[in-house]
Image (cartoon, rainbow, N blue to C red; front, side, top):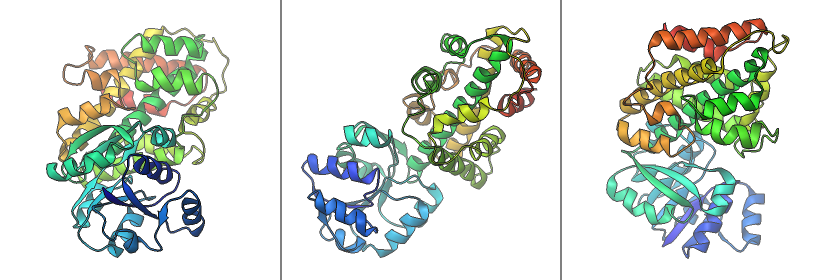
Length: 371
């Protein structure tokens, strides 16, 4: 297939390599002269402008920093080829472009792009998504059709917002568990055996946080952007999301160039009390995290449905990704606890935090929302 790729930065370059390796006839363009030269040195056909790159193309892929960059580039492009937007962007802005296109943001980072193991969440007409699928499969091992145009952007942002809540709540629980004499490894082990289990507790904590490597490959700045997109969609659809909105404020405190798992270091630095100073059973920590994740799941499902993404389809995407939790896996049936039990557990953990003079804003808000 004859393709054009606009944007060959950290993600675009390995995607270009995968497209070329899959046998596609590819022309690339990037606004940075140094990046164009690097791609030329790597043997790619490089155009001298975005419009020139699309000449004769069957489809045009966009891998750009944000919605503003997409809008600027699309204005330069002649009508005709199918546009496949890999950028994390706002659904409303995508629909305003008025072009035949598929929004297909990806997750999995640079390593996933290099290995061809990204996950793509595609929004658009079924025929257009079908046309884009063989292109996406050059670098994505999973391609989900999230729904109508804009649904891909929504699904990615809402999934990452769920991931951010889970990581934040788990970080608070692990950080304050020390005041009750619980080692971080012990708190994580209990969560992974209970209702507080999430993709973050199973993968990010053992691999990136407990080891001190903080090397997931996804920056805090990108997480801040995605959670911001989620809260913007919620505002546009007039859906209240108090928990996710607070998490967005929290992520603004994490250095943007840092790995997003570094949020644990930020949260861990909020206390000043003596360890093992109070008693609190690990069951309370487990239920506190689970109850927080359930609130976040309710918020994001409501936004997804308001955006036109079917609940079942959204949960399928989330449960295959980083937003997965016991709350999302059991969203329809619930986790079997009553609101008063959630409040009791969250208050117990808040008491532990108070003993250590340690802030737990996410768990504290969750307690109030459950009352």
